[in-house]
Length: 638
Image (cartoon, rainbow, N blue to C red):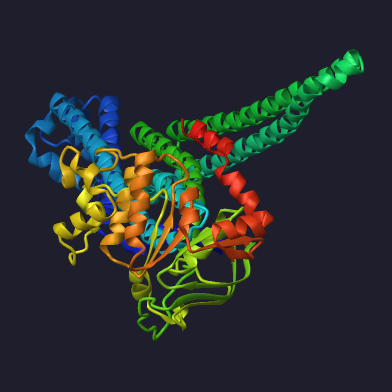
């Protein structure tokens, strides 16, 4: 139970009730409760005036008329009738201070006007409470989305398969919105019930304690029975529907048996079997609806019985020969009991909303409570840019229960070009993600010039090891924003020079506003080649010692390919280049091609050497670069 309550406690904190929106929600709902009290008082006065017709025997109003006659006294009638009660002590000075209340027509007019104004105030305060509840829920959803964004920044770099992005997207869009809608309604209903139910109970008991208890007990009992019967009916319907679904699945399986049926001439047998299950499905569905209707009928019968009992109790009290209850008080009590029943009935919705909040909140907080795979060690030191070699020593890596690397030993010399390839595209990406410490080895070490990068600062490692992804999205901003990324160390001229280095300057200059052209959802849309060169420019600007490049699998024309090859030539002159190749020319240009298979390094050599010595590599080469494979990828893009 505590596990379920934890998300609710985190979503609706004590502090949230004390902030501006929470406080104003309580204030306006309290104003609504005051309006309910005033409305009950006005209803009592109005009904009593209609019953007495605003006249009083003269012997009860001294000096106004001869004894035995009737005098029009307006609200003074109610002063005489209720003035001795503590709850009505305010009535006499109120009637005495306003002369118009001393006439029947004037008192009725004022009471009706006050009733209308009270209803308006009730509606207004109720709506304002909903507004502040919605604002509080909106703030909660905004905070959750900010937390999801921060957590995604922490967890996202280790997302090899993209599942974390999909999870974060579902939390960010669906779960946060579900919580906003449910929290807005739940807060409002909760505060309304917490305030109005006690107020209405006090009002009912203030009218008549004994009668109030006699009416409240059956009202609450009827609500419990109604709720229980409705839940039981719903459960019985769901059970019957589950049986019907089983029959439906069996009938669906029969649709796949046509060849068998026709081949063995068993049409009559199959039809008999089909009709039997179809009849069972219909019976189960019909039974479920019948059971639910029966339960609802029982619930309605109990409700009407309770209502009849309450009205009977009130009527008997009104017509009692001993201290009868005034009709006006009886009407006010029935109104208060009706409002009380409405508030009780809203608890079902309140519990449903609570469940929605707990389920959605649990999903979000499970994500927010995940510990990032990579963290900076205490006392981490600065890692110098690679000048000698990168070494992977007996590296193992496991994610989501899958052992991806099983002891990889690999040495990459500085300022060389290396391609990582495999029949499983996840293996080269795993090795590539280890170098900038997007992920950590389960076992083993990754060393830069003999230094274990696990003990280095993330900033020093990621400054000198940049990853250019094949599907890196553009930022919502200008071309210049996408290259500079808000880094004040670089100028516009630096960005232009980096773009020129990777042959991106030409296509940027052709855009409507050049480097100020806006990209993203409402800006220019770039093709795959332009986006890839933009990513190369972003990385080249920062001049890293190691550049990891995951090439697009397609979507590049011949001119773009030539420009990219020349860009590689320029970039490789001063740094270590590691490719996850998508083109044959890239694989062939590398000093080494590392073939990963079954979690280990299967072979290392040039493209030509591996073609001769490795059957696995030849298979990879054929699957990746043969004519039919390329044509299939082009068709998929189209």
